[in-house]
Image 1 (cartoon, rainbow, N blue to C red):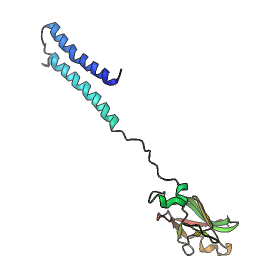
Image 2: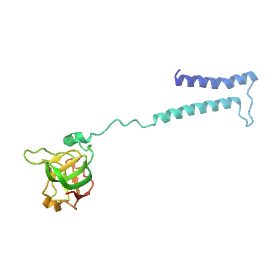
Image 3: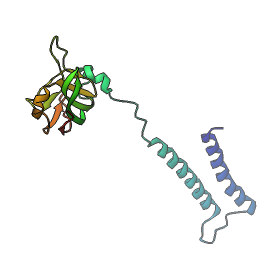
Image 4: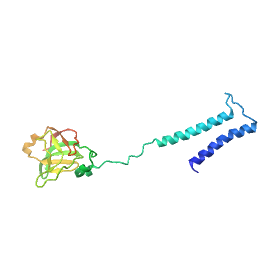
Length: 184
């Protein structure tokens, strides 16, 4: 049986019981506070309906599950133009000068949600614009969602080390700031 059917049967039972009781006793008998059996039956039905209505409303007011998700960092790496304003902003966990950028020393930015602006032939690709160290560049030898690096001379590491930097993705979103460390 459905809940609606049970509720209807229950209400009919609540309505008929006091009336049957009143008939079998030959009339309505007031309670100690002056209420008749009919008054009490109406009160019981009102309470039952209010409880079922409150439960139904509580279920109706619940938030629907969040089925809409934004694009992933991987989708936004090169496809950020397809998701205007919906790509996650860049976040930097650390920046350093060290070894291993395209086989040599380099300046690294580690984090997430980096974007590629444009592939270039024969020169480094364009990506996030760095602000705060060595001329604010946007060309990088390596651009992934989690890493940026550009080759730099170990002798010129002072142009980066100790400087506070941040990046601005091609879609215009800005990262947090960090200080560049020396890992050479």
